[in-house]
Amino acid sequence: MGDIALAVIGGTGVYKLADLQDVQAHDLDTRFGAPSGPVRVGLLDGQRVAFLARHGEGHSVPPHKINYRANLQALKDLGATRVLALNTVGGITDACGPRVLACPDQLIDYTWGRVSTVCEEPGTDVLHVDFGDPYTHLLRQQILAAAHEAGVALVDGGCYGATQGPRLETRAEIRRMRRDGCDLVGMTGMPEAGLAREMGLEYACLAIVANWAAGCGTDEEITMEEVLANVAAASAGIPALVAALARG
Ligand code: HPA
Image 1 (cartoon, rainbow, N blue to C red):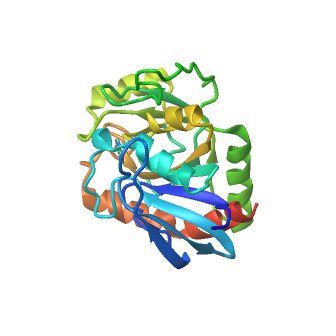
Image 2 (image 1 turned 60 degrees about the vertical axis):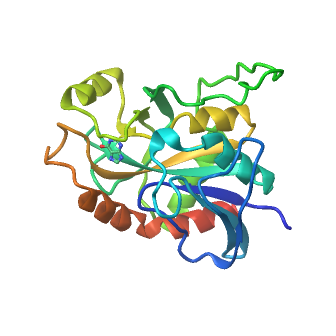
């Protein structure tokens, strides 16, 4: 099996990678258990790319039940070293309205009760990894360059706030997150980013804004139809971006 140029984890509304050719499905079992579903490895513009649907291909795994460790380990076991995390999010600040793509450079973790380290098992060395910059700097630069090459508009930077879900947030929770400095809110950014760092993977997030977060923007009720329609519209440029990133 040749090297994998890039691994992609798809979030809500992104259950496959369009344009992936000669796809092989890998049903893996890792030292952390089973991932959310098969890892599909195929060719994108001549590059080997792996894809995994974070919530499972039928969106059956809620954010707090995802085996984030197994998902990352499965990609690592296949030989991936670079992980592009696609995360569907709500937008809090003005630049982050529905259908915007953003590449955050910071995060705040509001999740709780999730397995958030690979150092839990008895006898494992405890790691205190540096996490001042939670996303890999070089991979972020490569994503920005790939977006430019693919002609895809991207907000450079911002803070991703990871909430527990699966319910959406209250207006007061979003007001607090805005005060904290969050631009985006999603449910799956952590512990994934922290685990990737512990596992030595290059990891960065491409956030797809599906809706205004509670109390922001047009402040309408958030529906799943709206979320999925906006993700579909905002995702149009993603295959070209991923292909450029896999090449670079
Ligand atoms: N909040 C949290 N997660 C989300 C949202 C939101 O508004 N939209 C899509 N994922």
